[in-house]
Image (tube, rainbow, N blue to C red; front, side, top):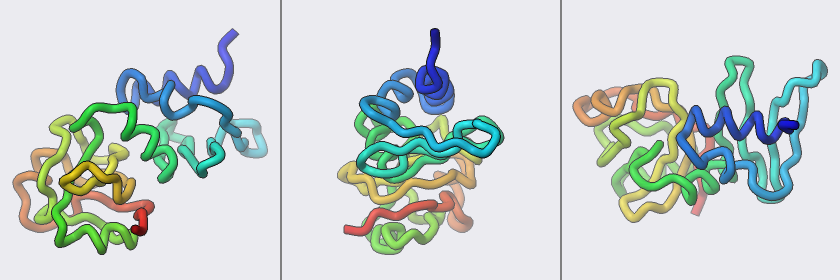
Length: 152
């Protein structure tokens, strides 16, 4: 019999790629539910992994971003920014297209992404506002709406 964690892992594999579900929901996780019993937030000892929206998609927490980063090979779900914008992104400010150095070519608007430095260090998680091509081509515009920055 499939468990809630198995079902959520299947959604994560679909959204982020094969292996994402196993990485996100490994070990002991706690599922917080809405009043109707629908899974809403999934936590582990290190913090919030993901929230499960009514649209059937996950939004990443910092703990989930760290787990996903370890499981997915670059450039999957990644947006890489330069040193000049890093301090602002760590504070939770948005990423603008002109500061994007590299991006996973599969990123589409609305996708959950990991924001990293050139050396691969995770500095934030958020939602892509532009496609990968637009991030690479545009000199203006918000590329990623940062949900959580990771202070140094």
